[in-house]
Each structure stands twice: as C-alpha cells, then as structure tokens.
Amino acid sequence: MSHFSRNAGPATASILLALAGMMLGGCVTQRVENVRETATGIEEGEGVVIMAKSYHLGNETEANFIACVGDSVGRGASGLRVVPNNEFVDALFPWFEPRTAPAETKGLPALMSRPGVAEKIRETGVRYIVWLDGDTDKVAGGGSMSCAAGPGGGGCFGFAWWQNDANYQASVWDLTGLEDAGTVSADVSGTSFLPAIVIPIPLIARARAKACNALADQLKLFIVSEDPV
Amino acid sequence: MSSRTTAALLLTLVLAFAGCGGANVKLHDPTIPEPLIDQMPLHVAARYPEVFDHFVHEEEIIGKESWTIDLGRSNKLLFTQLFGSMFTEFTVIEGDMDARDLDIDALIEPSIDAFEFSVPAQSQTEDFAVWIRYRIKIYDKEGVQIANWPIAAYGKSLATTFGSDEALQRAAILAMRDAAALIILQMDKATGISKLSEARAKSEPDVPQPLNLQTTAAEDMRDESL
Image 1 (cartoon, chains in turn yellow, cyan):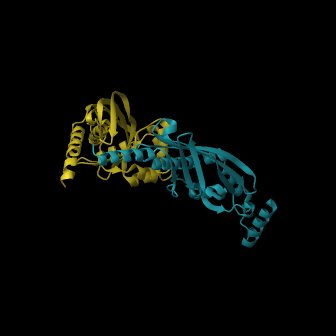
Image 2 (tube, chains in turn yellow, green):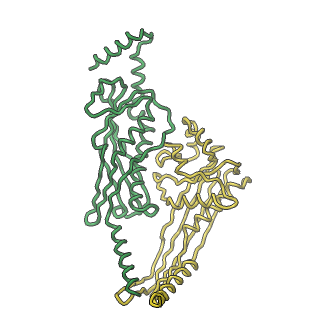
Image 3 (spheres, chains in turn yellow, blue):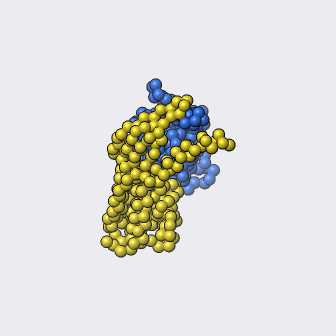
C-alpha cells in the first residue's frame, strides 16, 4: 500500500496539473453574425434538420460538428425540435444525397413537385433546413518540444503552440415559403499552448467546440425570432 | 517515471503504430432506403456477374500499408433493391438462363468496371474516398443491346470523425448510394429504357382478344423473336 502511495503521488500531481491546464484552456476569440432575408418563427410540432452542404460542392464540414450543432440546437429550455439528418436523408432518398441535394433555394419548387417529397417533408415536420458549410483548420503553429523515456524515468521539455481557426456558415431555408431565410456565421480563432517542464501541460483552445455552441445559440435565436431585421 | 508507467507508454506507442498498418474492412450487406419515385411500368429482369456474390478489392500503398475491402454481395443487394423500386415488375435471373424465354421488356446487366479507394496516407488529407465505376448494359426482349451506360459514383468520409475502418466502410456505402441516386436520376435519359414500354404498348393489339387466343398469339410472338 505504501509502495503504491509513493508512486501514485507524482502521477496524481501530473494528472491534476494536466486537468488544470485543460480547464484553463488557451486563448479564444469569436465573432458570430447573422444576415436575415425573411421573417422566421416556428410553430409547435415543427422542427429543423441540420445538414452538411454537399462534398460535391467542396464542403469539408466534419460530421461530428454537424452532430454537435444538432445536439446544441435541441438542448436547453429554448431548444428546438431537431430531426436527425440521417433519418431525414433516408426518408427522402435519393433527393438529399450529396449529388442530388438542391444547392440553392430555387431548386426547391422542382424538388417539392417530385412524387411524395412534399408529403414526406410534411410527415417529418421539418420546417427549416440548416445547411452547414465550413471547417476547422490549423493555420499556424510553432515551438519545439523533446521527450525522452528510459528505464529510470522520462519527461518532456519545451514549448509548442498552434492556432486553429473554425469558420462555419449556416444557411437557413424555410420550407414553408421555399425561400432562403438568411445565414448565421461563426468565426472562432483559438491558440493552444503546450509548455512542458518534465510534464507537458496542455492549454487547449477548443475552437471547434466554441464555434458549435456559438452557432447553435445564434441559430436558435434566429429561427425563433419572428421579426425581420 | 516508474517502470510500470514506462511500460504503459511503450505499449501505447506500439498500439498507435499498429493502427497505421492498413486493415481489412468488410461491408455487412448495406441497404438503400426505399426511393421516393414513381415506378416505370416495365417488366425488367437483371442478370448479375459472379463477382457480385463476393467482391473484394485490395489497395496497396507501396512500402506503407495494405488495405482490403470486402463488399461481399452488397452490389447484388444494391441493384436488386434499386431495380425492384424502379420498375413495376422485376426479376433476377441466373447466369445460364436465356432471357428471351421470359416475358420481359428489358434485361439489365450491371457490372463493375473499376473500384478504387484512397486512404489518408495516399491523399494527404483526412479523407477516405471510394470511386466505383459501374457499367449498365440493357437489352430489349429480343436480346438486342439498347444501352451501354458507364456510371461513376463517389463517396467520401472523414477519418477523424469515424475510425479508419468505419470511415472506409462509410465512404463505400456513400459511393453505392451515389450510384443508386445517379441511376434513378439519369437512367431513362441515358438509356431510353422507358421507350420499351411504349414499344410494348404499340405491339399489343387494340381490340381485346379472347383469352386463349391472346395467350397463343403472345407465345407465337415470343417464339418468332427467337
């Protein structure tokens, strides 16, 4: 027992330091904007579906970002009803596949006139389609760190940093009027640091997670608000 | 650092590098959803090549890793489900059966011209991508080829979102769905298959005949065509 305690001491301290570092986080700046084209609003029973713009159009939005926005839009007291996008895409197969999904709202009337499409959309209760575009990129980085391990122990020494930019845009389509309701965008820049004196302490800036929450919060406000700006 | 911690660190490194050596990926009979389309009023049969019962493709990155994807009978399932949804009557026939013996408007023979995929180590991106080039040959009821249509389908999935195996599986499934969407969208335009129902309508007599006579006439017509 005492042997375990002697070894666990520094390890526990390392874990605590690492956790503290993670909690402190790096530096993050964010900008959220929206441009409204028409009045919005949502009735009981109506919902939204969060989709990624097609990769045929060069979009690289990560599937876990889409899932994150979907979860966040549906969460909380002001949460909206979010229809899972895979259910929506399957229910409307093949009209929302990457190759066939409409790229602009002017394609909506033709889509709605296809057999069964308008009925199926009504069945799902989807009032708004939110098309996400964008991604998170590492735009800069530097520093150096070296680590060594041997039978007697190991450790790291140095300092590294990197900057991630998360730029996402959400286009909101209103399926009632078959029109573009507007766009919401979130640009988040986060710089993470990794100082190490024996133990590396990550100070991580979660740019993507911040962008997800900021975009989702703004989307909820944008859709629920009825007044045109 | 204790020897236990060092051992754990080394084990982690070994496991991390073991994950970089490629993989064998298998598709477990994926299906496509029921398409929202109007069926074409045609009686169609399909004949599949043997490779549709068990399709395996290997991609080797020289000096790095080897990836294998086993589609099993996914292609057979895909086309059976797809054509079953597109046409009012659909039958799958065996390889040795003469389609001219059947009362059909068209025989479809899909095949795979090429299957390729790329993994992140090749593309220097985080994507797994799959390309499938199918070829669809269509014959009328007399065995005359009326279309030879190549289709290029594509699917892409991020390795960072899913694990490597799952990302490749997903890219393959997306490519197959892409092929299905393309066939639904463009088949008639590219092959003119719906004209075969017009041809049948024209060949049918306007005045209804007594049942036994009509059957005989139809059988006679088929025999003549052979």
